[in-house]
Each structure stands twice: as C-alpha cells, then as structure tokens.
Amino acid sequence: MNDEQQALHNMLILGAGQLGMAVLRALAPRARAVQATLTVLVSPGTISHPSAQGAANLAELRELGVAVLGFDLSSDAQALEVLFAQYRTVFNCTGFVAGPGTQLRISRAVLAAGVQRYFPWQFGVDYDVVGRGSGQPVFDEQFEVRQLLRGQDATEWVIVSTGMFTSFLFEPDFGVVDLDGKAIHGLGSWKTKVTVTTPEDIGRLTTEILLARPRIANEVVYLAGDTLSYGQLAEVVERVTGVVFERRLLTLDRLRADLESSPEDVMTRYRAAFALGDGMWWDKAGTFNARNGLETIDVESYLRARLAA
Image (tube, rainbow, N blue to C red):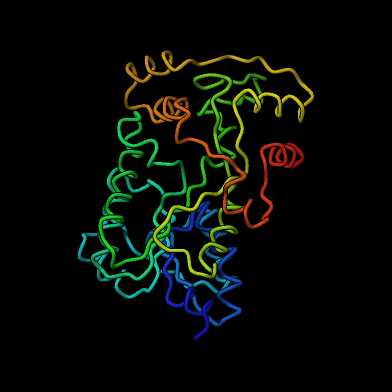
C-alpha cells in the first residue's frame, strides 16, 4: 500500500453539509484513483426522508463513489466508540448542529476507539489564542477539544484553522455587510482584522494537508483565503459594487452591552467574539496555502463571483 492509499484507506467523514461536501468533492477523486472507498456519516433522516438539498447531495455522493452511512451522532458514547473503531481515520465535518458538547463527546469517542488519525471540527479561529471566556460558549468547547487531544499520544491529530467562512461576512443575520441596505458594520474598530476562507478552498487544501509528505501530525495548520480589516473590507465592497456604503462602527463596549442584554443570541455572541481581533486572524503569508503556492479565493474574487451569479 503506497502513502496515498494508506492515507485514504478506511476513512470516515462525519457530515455531508456545506463543508463535508466540499471536502468530499476534493477527496473522492483522489480516493478513487488509488481504489480507496470513502464513507460519509449522515443522519438516518437524511437517508429516509431527505430534503431537496439532501437528495441532491446523496445523488452527488453516489456519483463520487462515496459510501453513505446513516447514524445518529447523539447516540451514547459506547455506540460511537464501536462505530469509530472500524476506521483508521476520522474526518469531522459536523459543526455544532447536534448542540453544545457535541465536539467534546465525538473527540472523546474517537480517542477511546483507538482511531489512528483524527481531523477534528476545528475549521474556525485560533482557539489557542482566544482561550476561554470569549463570550462564545462553542469557542470554549473548541479550546477544550485541543487540550484533550494534546493530553494523549495514541491518536494522531491535525487541526486546520481556516477562520470564518467567507460567505459569513455577507450573512444578513451576522450584520457585517448589508448588500441590500448598502451598509457595513465594523466590529471593534475599522482596523480589527479577520481571516476568511471559502468551503471549497478548505476542502481542496485540507485534502493536500491530509496527503502531504512528510505526513503532517499533531499540529495546527493555518489556511487563509484572505485576511483583511473591516476597513479594508469596506473598501473592497465599494470597489466591487461601485457604490458608497454607509459605515457604522460597533465598538467593543457596544457589543459587550448587546451581549449582556441578549446572552443567548448566537449572532450577538459571534459579533462580540469577532470584534476581539486576537485569534480571529493570522497573516496569510505564513499559511499552508501561501507557503506551498496554492491559490485561494480572496474576498474580492468571492464577491465578484457572487454578484455575477
């Protein structure tokens, strides 16, 4: 078995959502080339009663040659361990859809099952820098996952830090770029920075990380489609649209006050967290993609493509 066959042999991908599908689109052709079969875990309901998008994803997975397994990730720890023990590598693309504590529970089961290599759901910010107490409970959980992985040496792990999904900057509920209302909100200050990457780039680049030789193990690998300040973001949006946007600054004090009055509001928590700056960005020049000469989609390219669609 050659290196690529070994890396792709007996692999389970958790989740076929936006990121899971992006990863599978990049991984599946490489697996097929070395006659390795990938398995993706989805909820049983996705198979028995798929939504329109779920049905489309299942059809695409069949075309990609990916085996689909229906399994409930809210099952007890023993059931998770029995499942994971059947696989050499577990690649976690589930996100937080199963609620608080999901990532710790999955990670503990992976370790208890003796999985050889694990890519946890850490496709976000630098949780080592953020630490605990950011105002975003899932960030605290992600920090604890890192501590858990570093506290053992039986399972290799690779953490891929990607920053925010690029599209999230333009998510109306997040409230940073309001394309319809021609307004941009800066979080913290106009100089506060954020790193963003598209799911497509994450899928492609994570495949390269997975298959890299010498093998990458027990480290945090940074990706970046773009790193820019909220002031630079406003300039990009105005350049691409040709329209002057109203700029409104949400100071850290204002965001903390919003968080105190609405502590359970997810987007309020995210805005407060991303206003901190530290841990939310890193220099693109030092990333895996930049060091290896791998092109990525920056915010300007993303927005031009989105507006042209």
